[in-house]
Image 1 (tube, rainbow, N blue to C red):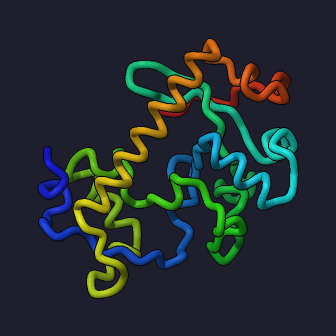
Image 2 (cartoon, rainbow, N blue to C red):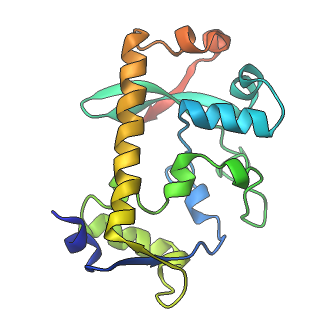
Length: 185
């Protein structure tokens, strides 16, 4: 199915983040997957080593990638709210200037645009998509840039893992003592 059919528009989608924090909350939406650049940028922004950041602010989960499960680094969830650890009580993000690609590209994820039902579910839950006269008009081309980058980041990550025998500890030795938290589909 083509993107225009999923979003019901040839022009694109208007979106303006309402800072509601819904995309950062809950055990499915709240999971923030990190790529290597995300880890570097956030650790630097927080003025700490990557090892300290990984050990204190991240978990490792097995996430579905194509037909396999691969070890993936996520930001820990706040145990009291099941939200991203960096989400403040008012819904805003404490690492906003260096937020991960996943956060930058929301709501334009493959998972959200796989079919009309997925897109409608996101539209119902995201107030930033329900204000059609406000926000930036993301053209089909701009949305495709997000989707292409997501696909490329995932492919690069998978290849990098494969080169390291799918062992995050070869890439980040500090994770030797971290156990896989759960399976994520």
